[in-house]
Length: 181
Image (cartoon, rainbow, N blue to C red; front, side, top):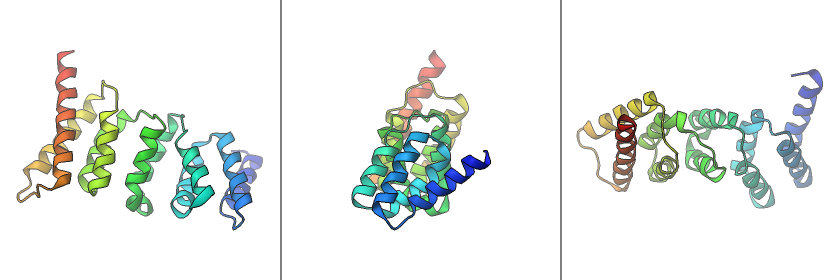
């Protein structure tokens, strides 16, 4: 980035975290026009701490992301320690924005296995809406994780268990279909 771009970024981030709602909203509009994936983490931080009009504007911005570079940044956010409690909310960005993160299938399976019911539900929704074919390595890694999950002794057959069974069925069907093709 040039020095000018760095200055603009610094000012936009300062404005995004301003105490003045008008300044925050103007910053969101400017960030939206830039379309730069490097703003995702600060936008997520603000989204999780906002309400009212600011939260609505951030939701609209995040739900209209179209750049494929965003997939990787959002997947990184899912594993960012400060965002783990917000994983289910981050997952909504993928399917609301119509992003196609199938190259991270095994990551979503892992997150479903690690997370609570709502996180697993968001992962299931996302996986159900992914268009095959999937990268073979992602399918294999996902199937291994699912097999390990079901092999654990004393696994609770709670609501989340049913969601994981559904994810397993979807992944197996895609795996079988890719082998046939």
